Length: 183
Length: 183
Image (tube, rainbow over all chains, first blue to last red):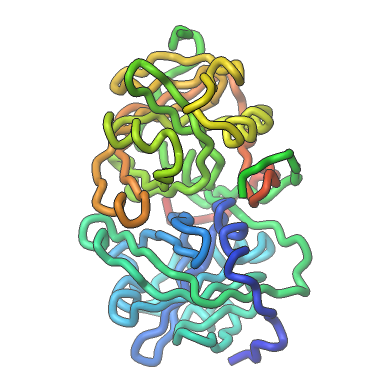
């Protein structure tokens, strides 16, 4: 386990939506029966600003599904584009067969409020609890509440990746700023 | 009303997720009582590949909410970055007060299967029906089925925008392609 203080600083929960609203590929971590696992995830969205609520789809064909259902906890780690190859690798194998933290050289870090580990190499990490499962049976749709958020101040202006299917990703390009009254 | 044949070609429903999974800002159109309206939307995600299901949050504070609830129909139009200023303008005023199609010079185009219009200037348009409202009361969360999809073949490699809050957007940057077994 890595030591959190080496990588992460507290991030205000009111800023969490700014990380997820742009739609980056994220890594979902879970831990059940003493075993941590990761999966790549693109099907997520913000549901509420504060406390931050996030909806996501975790297929019941994914190994992470059972852990999420049983523990009602997970973490969402956001990788920058330098980790794109690892993200694809994570998506191409199952936690049922391999220890993906070990296989992809990811450093687990203990979370504060959930058992699912954070990932040291990711620039942001969100500790989450499942708060609504009403659409799990029909759509594998979970609603999560982010209860703690971390940011790595050493990673300046990280560029995220956005999946277009079949291993094709768009990397963040230029930023534009327009006058807006919207949060 | 614009003529669809001038702008749009049929897009296979199986490819819809490739447009929404990267998390672009989209424009939601609705029509109720003979009046069409648009809103900017970033809180959406894919729920299923085929038929394509999409979840989205439309606040009950938005003028579009009532139209979506009463008609159970909408269209999702995807703008390229050239339309960023219009998207921000759309987000900064209410359809209760202004005709946003007129104000922002958007050309409505009749959809095939829903009354909510398409937008000629957007490179992709998705006709949607509301298929699940169980989380509307609690979270303003609608599940939509995309029943018809259109693409503008004249817009080559459109770059989308991703909202980071307060009028700051990331424009699509470079594309990378990695070996992947995932769709």
